[in-house]
Length: 199
Image (cartoon, rainbow, N blue to C red; front, top):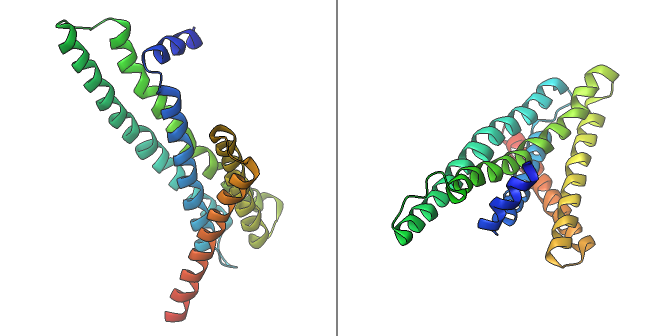
């Protein structure tokens, strides 16, 4: 039933899946890079891994729910309702209760859910090694290293996926995505050194 409903909505909005895919990938990149920044910037030999995990996961949840989902929903809803109103003007009749009206209501929700998933999922994955450190006795350095590795692996998978759907070399696209993450890590690390030199 859900798949049938989605099929009917995408028949009205052929671009819906590509919009949702772009939002998922874009927000995934944002959340991973932000989480890498928190992991590198917040690391010290004395930091509590639970606190670092909560910073990463909390940022992902807050950004995912309010920006990734609510913000995207409101933006997408405005676009779809604008299209619906223009259609009503063309046919000189209300479309309330029709499949077009239902699609205008459900399409933003579909995009928002995929968008929010991209923001929330990866920070939660990156927080797992840090949470596990308090249970296993893993050192903070090791747990942060694993967390960063999870983030870079996630970027690699997203890059590979983009390469596949874009018709490019998936491995090259994967390397490009990981390089972006490595550049972010280096930037935060250098900034951390600079701040440390001033204090």
